[in-house]
Amino acid sequence: MGDDQLDSAVAWDLHVALNLLAASHTLEAVPGVPGTRDDLAHARAQVDRHRHVLERDAPELLARIDTVLNGWAERPTSRLVELLPLTDELSRKSGGALPDTLPPAP
Image 1 (tube, rainbow, N blue to C red):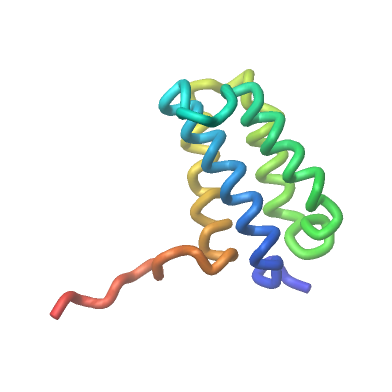
Image 2 (cartoon, rainbow, N blue to C red):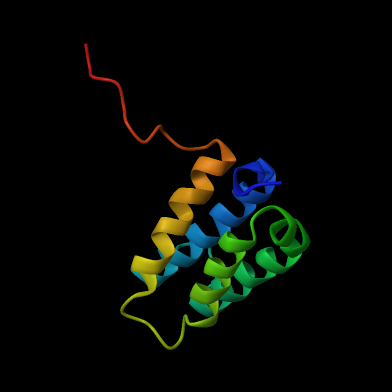
């Protein structure tokens, strides 16, 4: 199965977890959401929860996510640059994204 066959529910779970991580990094505190350390743990827990599916269906994506999460503390200035392309990709795979190119407005 190719990278494009990732289950949309798995992609959505990871998309949400990584977006919470990005939000807490950017805003420092998101009302009603745990702090960055908890968001990092939550993101890792979601990856671990779906690891068997990711290993089977999207091993390259899994490797990229692991690289970002494992280097989170060491690379504070490049976190978002590395994380946001992953959230975009997961959004597309989950079906929750706008098309890359929007049609012209009437």
